[in-house]
Length: 136
Image (cartoon, rainbow, N blue to C red; front, side):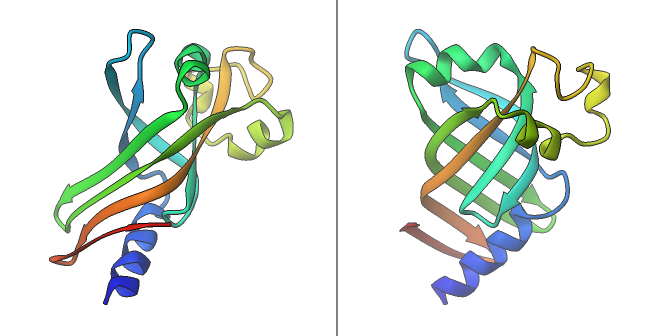
């Protein structure tokens, strides 16, 4: 049963351009949440986000993060807890780039553009009216 819930959550998270809430710890030690679009994901194992470099200081100070995907139709809540890192490699930045990013950045080489990679350590899933909590 638990594996089926994890597989279904992985399907949802891997959907194209899915939005979620990314929570980081700000420079004063408080939670800071923002809506992000997933660039690429490997199920619930890891995912990347394209963003501005304004998150770098927070992540350098504390790499703990949480990601939450939620919907009322279909009903699900996928909460992941883990570590986040800043990816600066140009090839990865090019790979993560998607249509619409040009509204915010001049291209993958833009110094204000970066990629964040979140890696899950534990999860709390409620999918298809079934729930499970665990560690990856």
